[in-house]
Amino acid sequence: MINDTVGIIGGTGWLGGAIAEAVLAKGLVSAGKLIISNRSGKYPLAQQGACLVTDNQDLVDRSDLVIIAVRPEHFASLHINATGKTLISLMAGITAQSITAKTLASAVVRAMPNAAVEIGQSFTPWYCSGGVEATTKSLVQRLFECVGTAAEVQEEDFIDYLSALSGTGPAFPALLMTALANQAMLAGIPGDIAQLAAKNVVVNSSQLLASHDAQQMIDALVAYRGVTAAALQVMRQGDFDEQVGRALQAGAAVARKGLQA
Ligand SMILES: NC(=O)c1ccc[n+]([C@@H]2O[C@H](COP(=O)([O-])OP(=O)(O)OC[C@H]3O[C@@H](n4cnc5c(N)ncnc54)[C@H](OP(=O)(O)O)[C@@H]3O)[C@@H](O)[C@H]2O)c1
Image 1 (cartoon, rainbow, N blue to C red):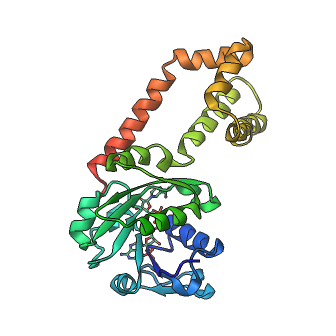
Image 2: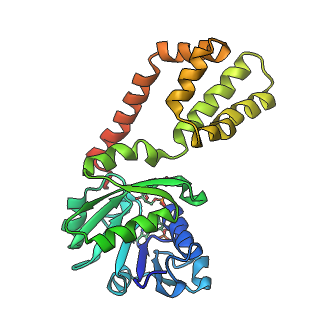
Image 3: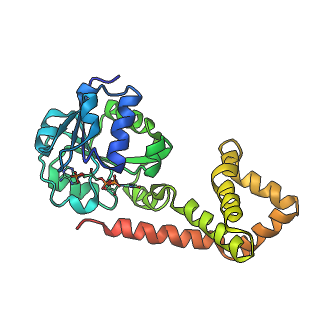
């Protein structure tokens, strides 16, 4: 358990709330050293001993480490002076430079978790701007390991690109699952069976990839020259990799352009 006080601005939202619950559940932060803010002033974690405030400056003043977990469009109306503090921003599409200019923070960490924080299965790349001490970096890593895996990246642009990749969480699998089920139904498979089959592929069978190399798996299935090989071949001939590349670049372009209102 750490001694630092952690403040989460927007700590009642999807990401901020999941992180708040995880750091308490994993014992990284004690309830007495967790401060959460929102505008509405309601949150169950307050009953567990975490402090809930509606004054963001009060949160900043009392915290050693501050996480900003509000939506990008709400950043413009967030007025805090974080002089001397390190801020961790989860906001997509808002540069470290804009955050430093608006908050006067001495250092900014941009981190990009995804919706799987809810089940402790996020991947969170993070980038440091300004002088961040090794002890703070280690704390950032431990904090995001409470909700999955995490890794520091050396370029801020990687965060924008990864916003469109891991930041999208379940989006790509959801698209694949929907396409598999819809196409199966179009081919005459009953809806309930199509849904079960598609869900098994995306949610269950894919678990094998946790312990098998994906490329080796593809190579082995293609070498088998069976049903799977024929299906994969059509995907590859249909420009699948390039289409994925275009999708990621489109998302990254939105992140780079900025999402601030
Ligand atoms: N969701 C994702 O999959 C995902 C993935 C990657 C990155 N992100 C980033 O994570 C951030 C949070 O996203 P989210 O999906 O968790 O949003 P969310 O569920 O809407 O949560 C935002 C929270 O911020 C609070 N809030 C808004 N303005 C505030 C203010 N001025 N002061 C204090 N609290 C304030 C809201 O509570 P009140 O309304 O009560 O104030 C709410 O609890 C976003 O910046 C997003 O870019 C999200």
